[in-house]
Amino acid sequence: RETHFGFQTVSEEEKGERVYHVFESVAKNYDVMNDSMSLGIHRLWKDWLIRHMKPTPGTQLLDVAGGTGDVSFRFINYIRAQREKLYRDKLDSQETLSWSDISKSYSNKDQGSLMGSHAVICDINKEMLKVGKEKSLQLGYSEGLSWVAGDAEELPFADEKFDVYTIAFGIRNVTHIDKALEEAHRVLKPGGRFLCLEFSQVTNPLLARLYDLYSFQVIPVLGQVIAGDWKSYQYLVESIRRFPPQEEFKEMIEDAGFFKVTYHNLTSGVVSVHSGFKL
Ligand code: SAM
Image (cartoon, rainbow, N blue to C red; front, side, top):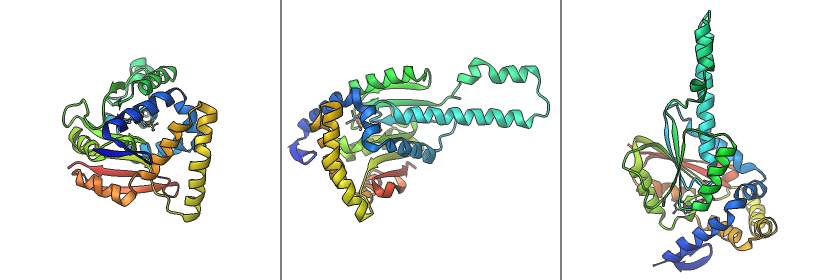
């Protein structure tokens, strides 16, 4: 059967191989390129995703197509901030503090604890995972994360294991989107949430025009100049244009069995965040 790789028609098998090759070759420069191509804005979109998720201590996250770990790192930061707040509230509510309270709040164990929260970063590409793991060590994320090689279309996890499933800038690279959505549904616990951050359709016509110019004229050039790789970045731009618009993607999520499916456009629809719940 045939499918698309950017604007080209290829066999399904070839698509998987080519996508693998793209991310294998961009892995080392992935973070630098993300910052330079989006002018750093991808960071704000990912921050927005986590604020929208509002994870609570104890949340089990599956970050599919998690690449170099950006979404999961933010998840851990959010949980850490929640934990600090819980401590502060607890300390504030006590009129007098004993020495044991104070030493407890500063003990290493408590400072390090994520109160049971955990994120699994699952990606098909071993190079992306390798870069991510190195980054996690440099940034000091010593706990709460695991890195698993796996395909979004056939996740290597048991049913009903996770509270939240995220896929950020990943689903448009998957050959059978419907299969990936079914797998998301399978691994979520009842009540669990699906969240997808993806490039989408720009709603403002003037911005759409500028965005087209930027995407097709500037991005492959930046890819060539910074990473010596025109073709990979050309594919990334083309794959964005081929991805279904907001309403159509919403219906696909509903067809996979999710309820209360909504989406939010960010930056006039340059990206959108789709959300749905498994009941
Ligand atoms: N989520 C990360 C982020 O937002 O920075 C990485 C996004 S990167 C653009 C897309 C990722 O999707 C790549 O790491 C790629 O290897 C992964 N990917 C592509 N096809 C996949 C599949 N079938 N299953 C799992 N991951 C896949």
